[in-house]
Length: 89
Image (cartoon, rainbow, N blue to C red; front, side, top):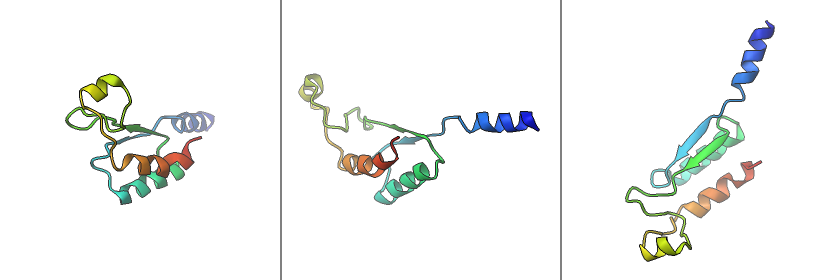
């Protein structure tokens, strides 16, 4: 019995990550992600900060990104970050 409890506690420490590509997440999907964080179904999020063409989606101030015109601010990024912020420890 002790070994079973120990194994269960070790498995609860595993990382359960969610991969997020903002091009495919809806506003309703943002609420689903927030609910997953709140209920601790996931404990980390990986955000793809490049779109399918290689453009940065966060509006970088980096001169290389600006010169290459490879930086745009994704219209969902700010809202998504505001949605998940309360769950950041």
